Length: 105
Length: 322
Image 1 (cartoon, rainbow over the protein chains, first blue to last red):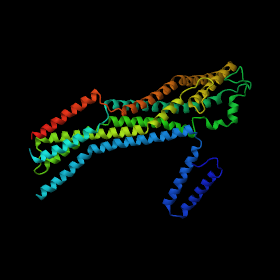
Image 2: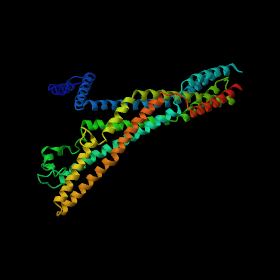
Image 3: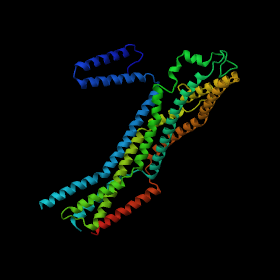
Image 4: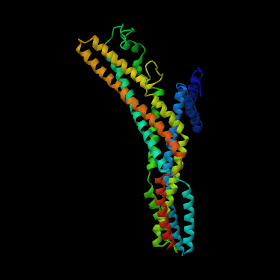
């Protein structure tokens, strides 16, 4: 995690952002630049975490985990719905094969 | 018996034995999941609404502070007899606090804290939805299509008499597979994240508890809110006392005092209810973990299993006799 107390960190990040901004006008390496920008954004977001104490950070991590759990529950429900209709898809294939078999016969 | 029907029966029975070994959630586990989901949704909804209200009311009360008349320098509205200090509003202006009328109900920690109740609410709603999800109509439609497709195959061993039995048997097997999937998903997810749920429940509850006098908790939203309301109430009362002959000041101060009293009443009634709800959610989470670790079947589970068995037997009997 970037250290907010280090006076070099924030100016350095801003400088890197400025350099990247200029590069977007002259270099067509979008993927690389996007990756670098994402990395910088991540570092900047970590800088804000410095304002949270350990208990608050633990809470934030727990909230993120619960949000992940919610996504997994929703995914599991979607998977169930897919399985419920899977046999119907098999039936469609069997029907198609039966029609082919009847045509050949 | 037709060789194809015999093969089909063996396959179906093998699948039945396989699936019956994978137990879905018991009635007790299902109820424990629904109870926790309801507790999480209730806690998330109540605390999320209250945090929004605390944010809005804090802004309203801080604006009201600026409408109060200047109090004498020697007055400390919170403790007029023992301490002296300059009027609060002077301090606030000199500190530039009008730039942040929401006080502690803004900023990084408030945003992070507010995401907790929303996450609990969404988690509770998702668990309720998956438990109550009913795919039986989709399953029946699918297995009816399967039986019809099998019957349509030239020289198919499935007759008109056995078509519905094939559909019913396939439907039952699919329902068991779905119940098993659901149980696996809930067991895995709930067990993996139970510590995180306990952490969030506890910290939400802690922030709606007013500590005993003299035991101020740092970064506590309930106490911060109460402090703003107490300051407004005391300042408004002082203004009324000092300017009782000024109709505009006394009526304005009375309105502010009533606002502060309403908010203090909220502190006394709603906050304890949310703290209690937080404890209930944590207990429901613990009970759910215990229930998921106990796969013993209850009477209702056995009755349901018996009913499924009878249905299964009926379907197989129909297939055997044709």
